[in-house]
Image (cartoon, rainbow, N blue to C red):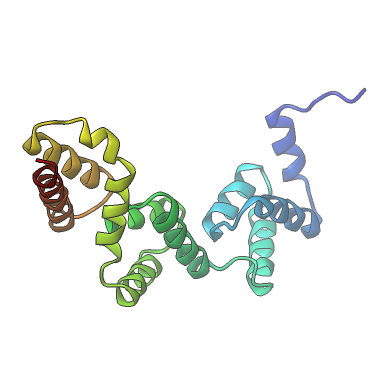
Length: 182
């Protein structure tokens, strides 16, 4: 039976690797789960103990093959967030920076999002509010409900203008529903 190696032993074994194909294979296994940024792949391979020159070679090869593309990654990340977990522009920029995407690339992708749909941020804010509608409806005081909605939006990276407008819209919508009920 083979004994499991400790993380230190694995890093030492990776540091002694001479074959660039082994590093490329490790990078490909990391990319199997989902698309990644160049910085994520570099961090993973360097953290595993592979030598810098082999990591750089593997990343260059993956870029040549079209398997690593930070702009496409950023675009897909923003689209995924818009669908599944709405975030404001500030949060999206922060998440992309955390993923290692250069600021200019993130700015370009977000500008493209806004050019395609000028209401993208406001729509994302409304979807986030809709997702939390039940908990917000439990707050009976309209002012407190608006404050909670605003805080929720601010925590998720929406600017003050959009957070305020969507929170006020929530209260206006609630007022018109209660007038229709009464």
